[in-house]
Image 1 (tube, protein in one colour):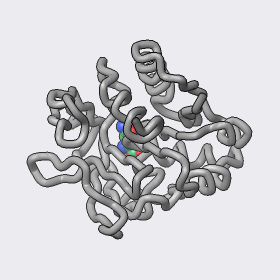
Image 2: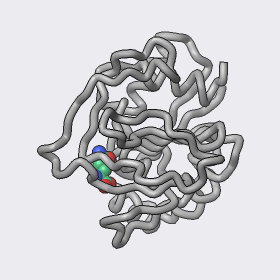
Image 3: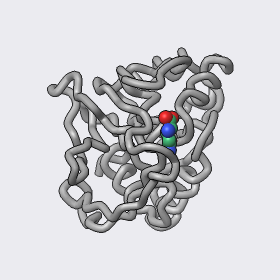
Length: 207
Ligand code: GLN
């Protein structure tokens, strides 16, 4: 069985684990899901999801627990599937344009991101998005944005393709190479597992 790890240092990791397990129960995938807090746990994984939460806290905890280097190396292995959501997207980005004191990102995805790009907590929102251009059937997904970042700039257009752009032109999802997904929203907070199911099929079991 392949193993999907969810980085469990901080943030919405339980929700990701529940969504993945729901997809596995519904479809009988030969997959295991584990919470990752140590290098030993990380070593067993074929894929890693880095959840939403608070990217500065996540970064500090990773450094204090000795996880920065194992993560830095793991995410650069092209045979692994990687997905960062919201704070997770910030944490895997090459460059962060604002509020980056104390933040030491993994510098994996060739993008520049702006944190809290939609404003304060009160400006958080849920919007139905049509993802069916890349995810079959996903034309009405309730998409949660909480103090979300946006992708301000794609630094290497050969490697990074925008995946989804809001009506106002802001890029909120991108793919790097064949194996790395970055979304500024939180599919794990919707009462809907279809986005996770698409991730499993497209990135993990590649059917
Ligand atoms: N605003 C948070 C940050 O900058 C991200 C918020 C989230 O993950 N929902 O880290």
